[in-house]
Image (cartoon, rainbow, N blue to C red; front, side, top):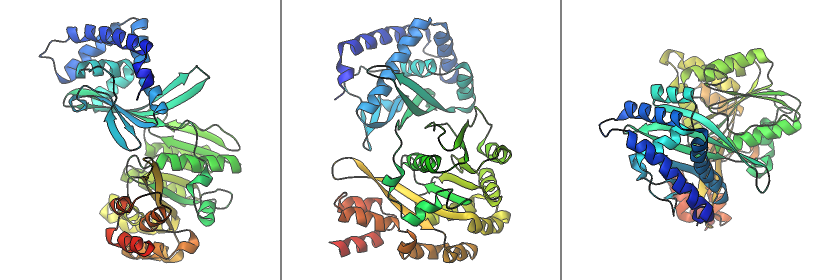
Length: 422
């Protein structure tokens, strides 16, 4: 249960917030919809005094703080789909926050607009979507900074918001369980160049893994790391490495521009938040080809799918050249999932591909279908398929048989592996 939400102080805050929001609701004629309604509410928010705006912000911040206490990864509200409730995802399950009154779509829109700057609101209205970061500070019982990746968007003409908690403490690189050879590929002291990709669906922990790898290099190497993100999530403090953070839309116009500009900034490692489009893919291959170490992410669920996606995203006439370049610069792919455990939490399952001469030849010859078996047989290089890792977790009794089947990419193969371990 949400202790803070039930407290007397919080209930007083909620009542104050509802009074302020009701003022805004009364101003909007019923026939005003969509962008015009947002503009009405924008004017209302801008006309509030600082005390009222702070009250609205305190309410939302209290829910963001609560996320950490209950180990929630996401907070969602606003729009018709929320059913006038706030929702949190806790250990993979999304449920409404208990003991809160209902908040209409208009009230939720006011809360969202109050959290944005004038330029952010203009961007949201123009693009119908806004990615941004939130930072809040806890002063009691001691100073702690929490960061969130936020996405504001329209749903049936109403504003909605998702806030994803960014871990305040990095996961130790050693906890990721990489084979020593794979760990060396990721460390600048052992491998000075090459492309390494961390892939998985949204919410699979890609950013957590990537931040752990960055931190490991930061602690062990003397180098310059440039991180291009949208938005910046975890902020790394320079240790042995000089670390620069550049946020797309704030410090640089696009991933492509940030990647190209990084070449003139004397980097050793370039971290590209996501290979979103063909232009960014080609730019990533260019900077890797020039002898730099590049890390990035992709929304794919397996190593083979990742290779096919990168090649398939580019122009048909360029695909052969991209295939050859990718084979030459790619060093490792980690495709991961967060799977529910028997104790109701989640654990990391991952597929690891190391680009050996055989894998490189398969990419160049457009025989990517052969790579799965190479991964399956590549344990000496630290490789394993998703199915092998799920079977390992089942053997350790961390996950159930049904979970292993559900999260496998190859259902038949994982059933064979699980049966052999029974």
